[in-house]
Length: 149
Image 1: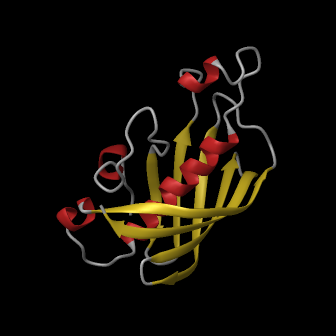
Image 2: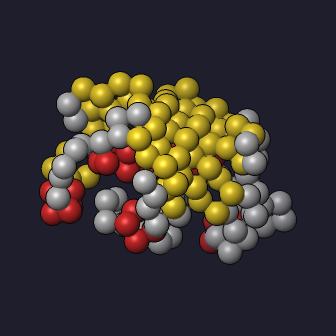
C-alpha cells in the first residue's frame, strides 16, 4: 500500500511547513511502515541551521519518524472511516534511545522505517529508524497514544 501526501494529510493533522513525510511506500498493518521525506535546500530551517553548513535538524528527523509512526498506528486500527480518523489524533508520550549517527543534508532522501514493538489498546510502542542511501542516520523508540480530539 502506498500513500501520497494528499492521503497522508487525511490521516495526520500536520501541514506545511511541519508535514515531514512526503510519501508512504509500504505499510503492513500492525507491523511496519516505510516512507520518505525529500530534504531540499528550499527548507526554511536551513536559513538558520546552519546558513554556511546546512544540516537537517535531528529533532525534525524524530518528528518525521513520529508522523510516520502515527500513520502506521492509524492504518493498523482496522476498518475505520475517514470521519472516525478525523475525530482522533496521535499524541507522542515519549521518545527514548534517540541516536543521531550521520548528518542529513540538502539533497538527501530521508527514508523512515517504522516497526511495531508493542500495541495495547490505544498505546503504541514503535521502533523508528531513518536512513539515507541505505545508511542508518538516526534511530529512536517512540511511544504514542491515539486519543479523541
